[in-house]
Image (cartoon, rainbow, N blue to C red; front, side, top):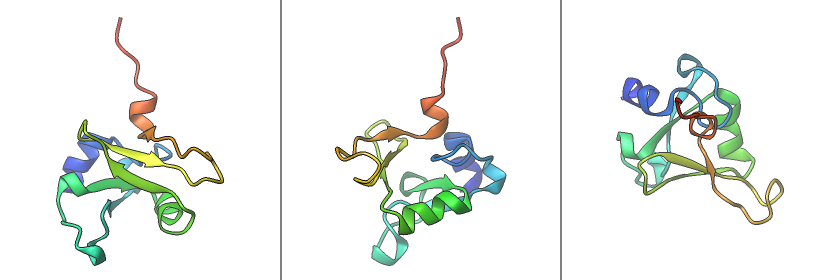
Length: 94
């Protein structure tokens, strides 16, 4: 499953750290009944994983099948969704 997440996310969805440095994270926490499956997972490096659990950041799965980040109100009072790191920085080939 981590390999599939690495293909989809290409590393930490918040900061872009390499997949090899990242942990698999349950979007809906396992302790809250979240399933252990690709559609409920994403990759986060240790620092970003801590930010999700302790600093008010949230991850939501978008209709596009990719994880999106919801910053805390202290970062964005409107809490606008952000694309995952490697999707924010994608460019189209000419």
